Image (cartoon, helix red, strand yellow):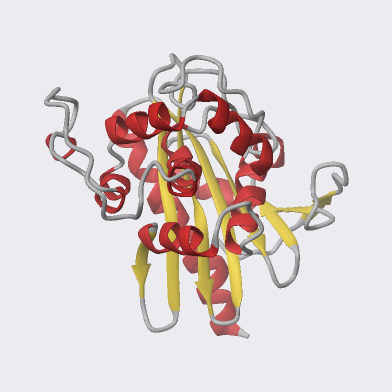
Length: 267
């Protein structure tokens, strides 16, 4: 099936798009989602050209529970407040056996984010405390900035919500070092979220799975450095069965390959 980008439509949303003037619709991307039998939206931001692209602009503006994508800001806040001195400081496992064996051990920031260990980040949030957590979310302008639902649960099944567009706006500030976080701590988090690195590309990303709801949601957010440009993305999908979760990563890889790598090579 030809998934080349042949049709675009533009919707101007000036009150939301602070770094670009429009979202360019790419309905062809719907085929990636239908291939896996799921519903979702993929929002991509081309930084050099200041253009957003999406197959579903309505969903790209809708807010969802951030789930484990919140581990990026949580890491930044923990480092900046001194809750952790660096990415290598160990927090001892509490001995409670949880869903995955690889969670059930001592972790540091680097290992915990790589396996998305929920208990570790809940402990960080408790150490940060509600007052400091709310202060930083307000400074970050992160989604609806609502930490109701418990200091160690608000991003899992509490009231915090963020849209794909807001995810990218946060990641832009993170990339540009525009958050109220030191350069040292920003660099640490940028390094620990590297997923793949080649001679010409770097993929930094984090998954999320809002599994504690009747309607589950999956995330894959991050940015892709290639050549002289940066492509920010937020993939947001409905998860109806566990095997749907893999589509978060697979769809992202397909779109980055088709839209970024292949298109660049054709020029």
